[in-house]
Image (tube, rainbow, N blue to C red):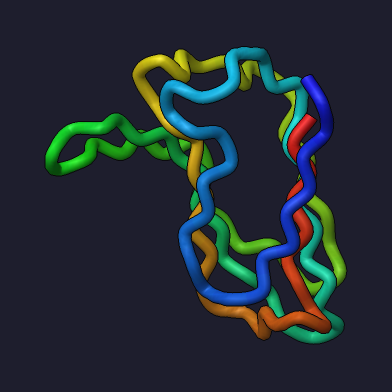
Length: 104
């Protein structure tokens, strides 16, 4: 799988891997909070395509300022049934201080 880079600049939900999209495993996901003074909350989850989507949370944590979090174990899921998504909240996210996410 090719490396995918996301620079998230606001409190939002981002699809990292679409349902029915590219097949292929994920080896790691690195989250880097680039802000000098403020932490950011991240929620990583898989979601089905039901009319009222079901969410299954993998991670819900705060990433302190200028800190990286690496997930690199047991990251497989069936993307014929689920999408991998990330919701960010809090923090001083903007174009100068993004949450950088690298999916390998």
